[in-house]
Length: 245
Image 1 (cartoon, rainbow, N blue to C red):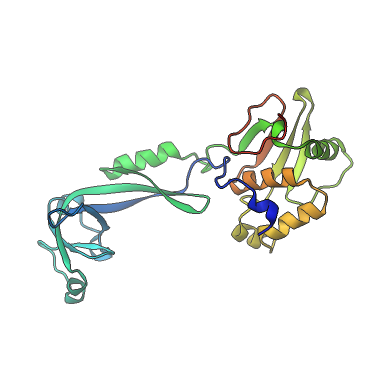
Image 2: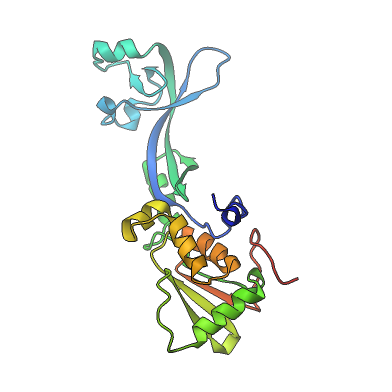
């Protein structure tokens, strides 16, 4: 791993909201005394059963799934795979999501309608809370600020070709960057550019982009930010390096 890349914060302060929000129906099962309850999904052969045919019904289960055993026909091969017996105490609708390709358990609801309402409240039509950030210029070195000012102020300059384009905000002494091809994950960049992020990073550095700017653009682009504005009057972001004390 590039040494500079290794110095980036462990968590990404630009990460907001969840991707791939979805609902998983789980059974809360109690079984032998002194054992805590466990959660299992229904086997696909019984997913058609409504909640009222699940709650407070006996079941058999293993590490992967559960099957309602009362009033249901269970093939012998499935019965043999389930060595544990229990009682379904509650049907749970778990809201799950992803952040930076990591799976997260958002919360549990007790009806499908409530879970769907939570997803609606957490989601926007774009799938993101915000794709525009305004942050302090203190997160850039003087070298990086001069670079951005020079690139953004030169109206005759060609596009960088580095998946970001600077622009100037004269009224507030700020400067911004339009990020292209986000998120800058290896999978996405392989698809649109044919190379992983490490290649893009090296190309940016070889083109003279200061490392402090490369680092903050990477974190923003990884979180699918599309417009990043640096303003001397904006607030600093916890977790990002500060270069102006």
